Image (cartoon, rainbow, N blue to C red):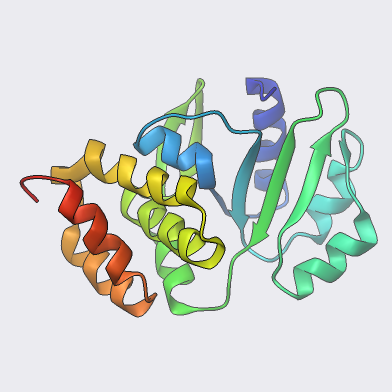
Length: 183
């Protein structure tokens, strides 16, 4: 179970190591849309993670050598809190225009009494649509749809349309729009 202390410890270590981050995945979609159970926290971070890895080992299980190799390949790696078993997926920022733009658009939001950086609602929708397309998982599409239904008039639909086209998820975004009235 994620506690304030566990999250604060991870985020404080990012700060201490000079690493920018943003919380994404189900935690971001829960914040912006319809909450559902999740068993991990996804965090996108800048690539300077070696110092973080060496210091996180006290309280978290990590396959250190594998994680170093995975970072170079811009792949996801896990850290697992020893006492609770709570898992964080650490995702190095991808080297592409959209990833750089979404990282710049992150928003600082108070969450469980902590100021945390989160993926914006629009970028959470786009990320969920990409995952839905890649994995054919309806749960990812439902997360994106839930955000759109909750946030509909607050969303920057021009931004969504532009990036949905570039990310080849326009059809999925159209499906969401068809489910929402007054967009």
